[in-house]
Length: 404
Ligand SMILES: Cc1cc2nc3c(=O)[nH]c(=O)nc-3n(C[C@H](O)[C@H](O)[C@H](O)COP(=O)(O)O)c2cc1C
Image 1: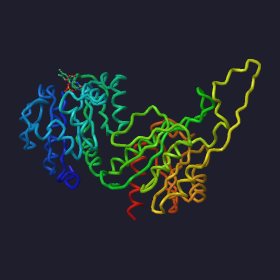
Image 2: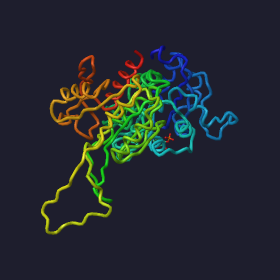
Image 3: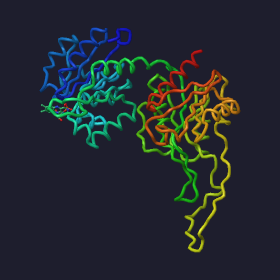
């Protein structure tokens, strides 16, 4: 493993009761050899497969197993390892531990450590293929991913059970790369405050009906996570979504465009960057009815008068400190790059992320996106990639701009 990435780092390695435990012994050894302090925590289940002594002899540190064990509780040992960690790695991660982490259980040392940690979380699942494919496991994995954990997907192939399918622990190289990435991105935005907007807005027609859009919030949430991972203090101003709140991010829930505007402007003083990824309604019903509008049996058609919402981006640009970086998003159903270039000029933005929402893989709600970064330097088209990768690329670009 890359000694530059690991030297001097405190890695907590949570080892759980999977048959793949034996493979992770080598991971602990490689990280120790690369100069990291590797603190192994094993679940009692994991000790059924391998003795703690094996890890202890290779990491030169006592292995912790029992919550109510012998380590120093005067120093709050059940949470101290999490607070000290530069990265927390769970490998192999069983379906059981993934479920516990997804629900925030604190009934063992891995649970308390993960809950107390501010560090990035890398999870490498390993299990029988039907356990992996089960909707319960998939929902738990997705919840952890939404909150910012890196999931190193298990590989397909022959499993210990003799079955073929996905579930085999990822290669040590893939897990190692994920750990190095998690460690590498943790300071690019250190000391900076970043505001991210995400999701749709809801504009009331009456107390039960709204005008809204199909934004899932996935891109904004991924940017908030990537910025937080890069060391930023993040305020996420979000319309209603089905996503879990990312850990370590200040969440400001809003509904209407007016509420979003107010929340962003309140957070603006001192912010290093504002990323406007929310899909803000351009228009709202002229008047929100006080009582539910009745169905008119005789009317086959009804019309709704809409009025223009205030332009939030314009207000942000007008009120920002000139050093504050402002990033806009342009989702279009045609030539998104031309529209983004126009937006960049007319609204005096630093960067616009353009995407054509009719392109395959870039539809509203999808987990992938094919975007182009448009700035005064020109247009940089990225290939189709996960929204999380787009977010990481965007954060790296922002860090570059802020540093220069
Ligand atoms: C031989 C054997 C192999 C197992 N391998 C796995 C595995 O690869 N993945 C998994 O999720 N569970 C596996 N299990 C089941 C877990 O050990 C069990 O769910 C346990 O409660 C996990 O607890 P822990 O996550 O606290 O370690 C295995 C069980 C046995 C008996």
